Image (cartoon, rainbow, N blue to C red):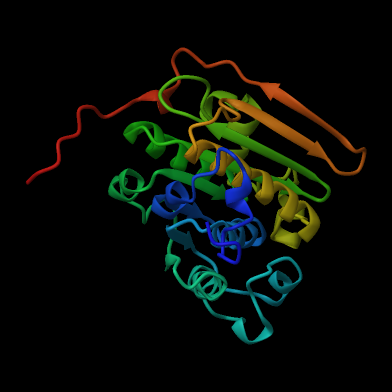
Length: 262
């Protein structure tokens, strides 16, 4: 090991295998505040390939919460700008940004390509779409959510354990049907604010924990399987919620065997 190598400090960790990270393929859904921090961390960690998708373009309000965006980037697609900036951090990173809707524009082939999926989203509809796609092809995914000074990190490992849909309450389904934001905001608030209130500090905390779970997963270590780690930044309290698997959850439908043509 070269003492001045790019990943020399990582390789001081007894169980660390940089080759596993170099060979890993990650689908990142969302390139906002959480997605920026996740993509930055993946680049720093030396993850080999990342496909990032996001529907939106960069607004001025994104500049206070998104480390990969600059003033000159306003109006450009979040996914492509974030991908370009991440490659500047780690030139060997193979990263591609796609401006698109994760609910409708991602086929199952993309999920089969990825080793794991990381979500940096602000709505239930996209989370449910990711969850069902991941379970159909048996791919793990790590979800993150932030609001003001509170954050949640969850991991779902098909086919066993609870999935995202298993954790949804009747109130969640009502909000999904009304197409409300992830935050518990009234329709008037959603129309006026348009976005969930977030801070860059909580985004960095939650994204860091998501990437830490990803590193552990890539190394075959135990992670938050079907559990949620809640971080209360205001009261300095963190706790884990265990969700039971619902017996008749629609998301547990799985396609098998899948046969690739020659």
